[in-house]
Length: 252
Image 1 (cartoon, rainbow, N blue to C red):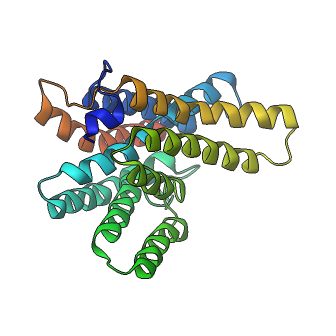
Image 2: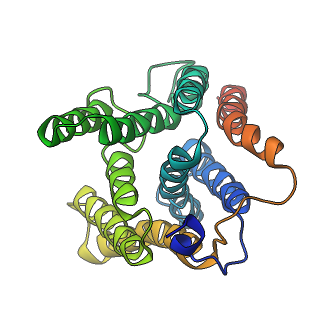
């Protein structure tokens, strides 16, 4: 079964269109985290909408891994942009200072997810393969990394689902449920109604990603501007973090 059948095929959004939406929702999430009042209504809305981005990134990482002409170049490209993004990431998310270490950025996490896919393809022994993937997943916690544990889990789920629409539905079901559960655990100590509302709101962002991939994605790239889109998605991440970081310094 091809990618188009797996993702729906009759949708109205290309791969690039969904990625552009993901970049915008990520920007809203980061604006909320850096500049907006925690707990305020619009802060929560911007934050929750931004949860659309990570599962989309993981889905297209798995898809891209399958069709790339050179996995080596793909991995090196991720490594280069992970390194390029680290200072802007820390600059944007440092609180009360000019620059502190704030963990590893999302492209680094995607690089680890890429290595998880590599281990799944190239490590013959089932035990060693599982140990390698578990170790790489744990690495995102040790460092720590943006979307640690979740991005590796999503990558494994989407890799398992590759080629099957039925499995893709189940993969996104578990992706939404896992995120809701972690948000629920993270809200311990708050009133139950508030904890439920906050966890459901956050999970809605992942559910929107599921809807976009399963029902709106047509399985194809945009007809025009493919080369621009490819590099835009890499450069947007460090560029917008740098801009937000410099703006943060300007309003300190």
